[in-house]
Amino acid sequence: MLENRKNWKNILITLLLLSLLGISFLNVMSLGLAQSNNYDLKLTKGTTIFSVETYDEDAWFNTVSNSLNPSHWFGGDANITGAQSKITIKGWSYTEWGTFNVISSIVLPQEQLLILYALADYGYNNTEINEYYPNTYWLWNSLQAIWPFTSNNFDEKPNTTEQNIILKDPEDYRKILDDYNKLVAQIKNDSAVPLPIKNQISNITADDLLWKLALNTFAAAEPVGNYLLTVTDALETENITASSCSLIFNRTGLNNYTVEFAYGDRGTLTSVIVKDQIDNTIYYITSINSEWIFYMILAIAVAASIGIIVVLTLRSRKIKRA
Image: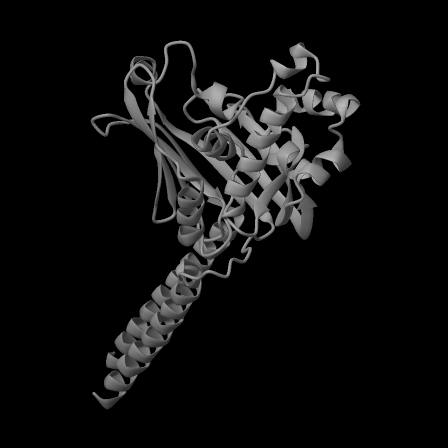
């Protein structure tokens, strides 16, 4: 009897130790949620795989648009349920940029970059724009390899390798938006700039800027929830709210709908969900990353170890009884 009690005591001690390790792990993982005004980057090198879990095509065409599908937002085969995309973060640097580089990297749409370079012939090159608008921005510049959504196997090599800019101070998104819109007004009032060039640039609203960023792998510094809230407050967005670690866009197509971009404690995108005005899910992207795969394997290993300990202990008790 004493031997049996001793065995059960050992089992309980083992389970208690494993529980304490689990609690410690969860505490470490939740530190990123603490509120602070000191923002820091919590990126890790690794790969995230995104999967299209839900796509209700009829609901999309009746709510969002009957001429655009998810591929127009997310590229590739994003309009096919089961399609996957992949992003690998290769590294990052912390640096300071001037107005020209930030505008060309996060404000202007890709198709308008040639217009910005064309303006160099009319007094708006890199140096001159930075002199007109001398704000500087501390930021993290991460390098990421991107495989677009596909319903087939991923290619060995990524489709593109791109920079992803994360401003150190979330209030700087307001500064760069204001400087950009001032620059647009200056160019439109400059008689030296040809009219065809003027007609190809226009002001950008805060909501349009954040929507563009969200569709192009926007990421946040830690604490993530506080960072997102500060971004929306600084930009004074009209139809975008920050809730916990999500950005929620209230949009109107054929009918009203919402798009929620959720971010993990590392500040990178984890899911996208589109809902109609009665809260039915129209479209849903989920993700899993290499870090979570490691912890899942670790959890399975711990659970298996506990199971083995219990089985061996019970078997030992049976043998001793015999």
